[in-house]
Length: 298
Image 1 (tube, helix red, strand yellow):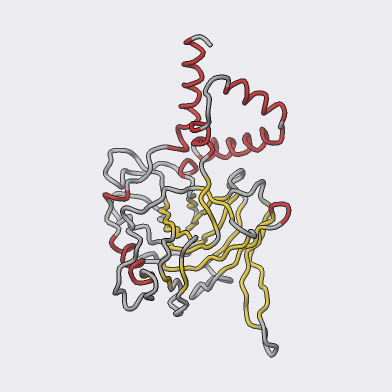
Image 2 (image 1 turned 90 degrees about the vertical axis):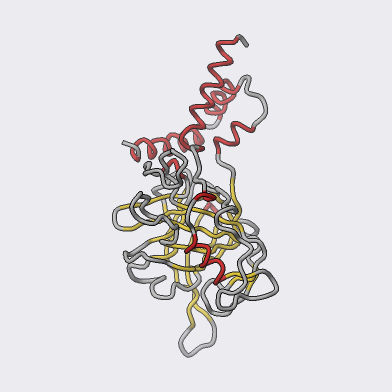
């Protein structure tokens, strides 16, 4: 391969990696004291349960942020989501999962405007079933008869098994995948406009009481997702608009990162073309996602 072709391949990779990788928020320089207190009050190093916000959490919200943006279910494809807190936010909020291939395809988990999830926001369960069917539901006591009844909340069929999280307030929806969000002011002081509206943390094995119901369980294998609807330079960006703990999910590498890590830059363009020709369905899915991004950034 001559040098012109080499530069063309490297340049194409840089363009592919641009919006998805971006410059992540530098949580180390941010004032996240409210979020840290939330973790200190709800989690504590095992085997001691959190008591009156005494023992500090093993999670340091400034240094332990994972930067994860896309996720998949682990194990049998079932999960649960536990609401933790909403701090200093008075509006109605909707939180849920979206299909990575088509971000307009969503499944609601919590909705504080009414219906399931209102009030104390009890545990919401999620099932990922055959044909990429995603179902969210609650379990409620059955009158007269002992036991619990499954009460559906929302469902959708995803294009694949990878998803992100979204948060909606009014007419604004933000996503864990930062390239889906419009840019905002520089909120972490690094001189770069930001579009990350979520901070994510991986459980460390702390005892957690997510709903203040004395259900002290280990958070090993869990993720915490902390969202902020509006990033601005005049209001605290403390990422406590909506904080949720989720179990049995794992982080998934971004597609552009996989391209950069993958072995062999040579021949990438040719392989991609052959792949599109061999897998037209995959090509359509990528085109669908790109159409969404183009409309989002108009």
